[in-house]
Image (cartoon, rainbow, N blue to C red; front, side, top):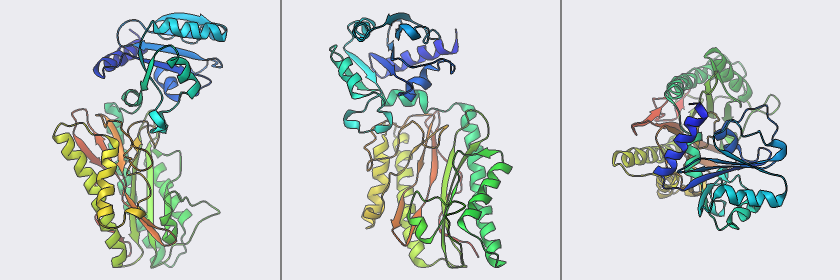
Length: 399
């Protein structure tokens, strides 16, 4: 049996477990990246016409393809229906669904989880016009897009260990420049971290971040060769670094640390760090306790755990992003996010997936503190924090 046939069988097994009647995958000119990834179609084929691929929980899959591209889905199991006109497309769709009353598709009610909304409204109207109820495939997608295999997990733990070491040597680099009175700026620190990536066999699609003082209050700030600020004694510094092993199908690790360029850290920074750390630990403990109790857990609940802690401390208005994101072969992966602020992520957190926990408090124009760790849920539902030890205080870089 081919790998794709095995994959289709595993999809059908998951459909049964989730009590979903079937998954209708639709694509047009690459509009649905999840259909592209899940079906693993040969990369050389031209895709300029709409196709549907129906995977029922029971029975044989069905294909609906345009006459010009009638061979495009030949790598997949199932019978083929060919259409030419828009009328025959609608007739073909009705045929392949065979009277089915429910399908899962890449859509989210009210676009609550936009990351999975890849099917346009008109196509949803077409499917519903056949008397079919469309439900979200959000939890299906992450089973086949966000789960790691054993090799990926092993590589991730190694990458996380390297990132944690790079944090220490980066603060050491800053210290050496400061005590030798050698000018240093954010861009040079960024490039130092990149050089460490290369030496350790790591890669990243985007450069790591070093933010000083007010720049640290901008959670998406990135220094460049032309736009950067100097680092001086008495400055507050945030570094955010993400990378993966430089090999196919490796997965990212992602951490954020903060430091102060001095021998001792002013109490105002440590006070806010303690609040951020408390939110981080509240989220991590909630995940650990929920899995220990054998209960289902959803992304929005983890966000609530961190956010409620920070709100109780009086800083809720300064926590302006989600608590965490899914992590995979791309840094922001296709699994559940820890989010109940930007979106209400009702996807389940499932085994063999990873996500960040990274609450932050930001004072615009002044400074911002974020503490980021990664969490991996093992096949046996063990909750594993990676890149240890976690940060417990703002680092006094010159101590």
